[in-house]
Length: 634
View 1 (cartoon, rainbow, N blue to C red):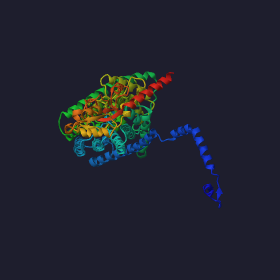
View 2 (view 1 turned 180 degrees about the horizontal axis):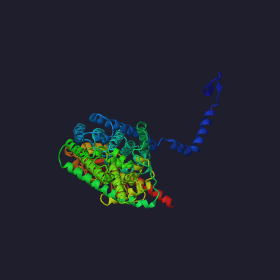
View 3 (view 1 turned 60 degrees about the horizontal axis):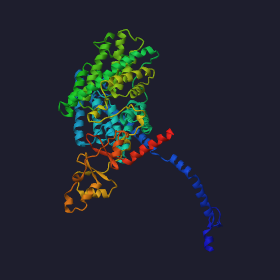
View 4 (view 1 turned 90 degrees about the vertical axis):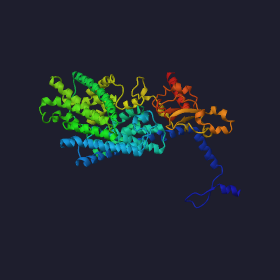
């Protein structure tokens, strides 16, 4: 009895005496709680699911961090190029304005000297860091696991800043985007995240780099979605937008919100004005296709020299310097000259061509000079972007077209800057094969909506014309040469939401070397649940697979087992898949495969093992899709 009383008492704070509690009270409370949970546990689970920190929310947090990195990288790039200018010119400012104040000999030798320094940074820097993986953004997304080498990117960034700071005809957005994406990838590598998340981080880095460099958050997110990831699904697009917005705001806190290019206001109200911009789109499409072809030829020509990279970059800089004797406007990315064309093209007139009648000749000469300077810089192997030089070429082409129409007494009510702005977008559309990106980019960097109708028309016409001559963009052409195919568009409805191998790819099944002893292979099977083990050579190329079933004949062997290696018992390489393939396209391979984890290789040509996909996961995805479609039809 005493024991029952002792267990049935409770001390209530604030009351100095013991209160007896009936022993059945606790059991009653517990029973009530159990009945409540049984009645409402489904609702509680739904509430927990809604407030749980999902993977999508986690990706947004990561994207915000990547956006901060992109904004800071843009700031570092600005100060790096300004430091290079102070070192070579003892003054800051736009390269074109600096070149105009220099003597002809200085215009010749400073770009050549800058090319030499940039080449030496590449030559010795890449030797010091040693061989690393690909640093091409699209390649690590399309045919890789999202891993970008940090040391290589840092070396290329430093080389790019020297080239830009000394007058090379190239844009700094390339270096900013590359380093931003690499830092994002490195973050994921340190955290040991899976390949699908690494590729998303690379896309966020590219988006933040473009957004910060151009103060263009929409264009940054669209660039990463269309060009880098090739996917417009919301679970990917939302982090890209988040990264772009954060990067833009970080950059604006240092550089402000001013538009990159200043365009005079113009009211575009008459439908009969549209045909002139259709014709401009045709010219820009042909010019864009020719530019892409000439870039390839220029790169091939410089490679035939069989000279070290620093010699090639010096020769490229020397060509830019020679052109700059007469046309100092070819220095740098051409921002200052493009602004002059957009504001008042007559500012380009200088001695001995000061008459308005010479304006058409000056614009055409400037277009050709910038074209050759860009071909020399990019073809020699300089690191950087071609976005801004492409805008320069488009502005020159559009300006020349507008002046020519005025000379022929056509379209007198349309100002020349209107044609220049539409030419910028049309040229960008032709070279990137993305009219949506070109429209948004030109709008964001000019903040002028009045010319959006003719701009849209010029962009779509130019890509149709360019597509008749070239099938790849300035970004996909290097991958095509490596045997990779990048599909930036599809004729299938809903293709933007289709999942790819890269979306579900995981780390590869740990492979064995082709010379691994059979005892090591058997031990690997005992320590894993895999029925097949991939076999690779020293270059990580998939040379075959070992099946667990094939080891049975060796179980009763004696000492001779030590002489058997993986190469002796392996099967030929099975059908493999690549990260850029659609799941629908690989379904026959999945259905025919005996493996639980199907190998993923970078390309079917190189056959380098980079990941795997679970056969059961692919089949489950298709089962869910079929069930969802059947349910919607009922």
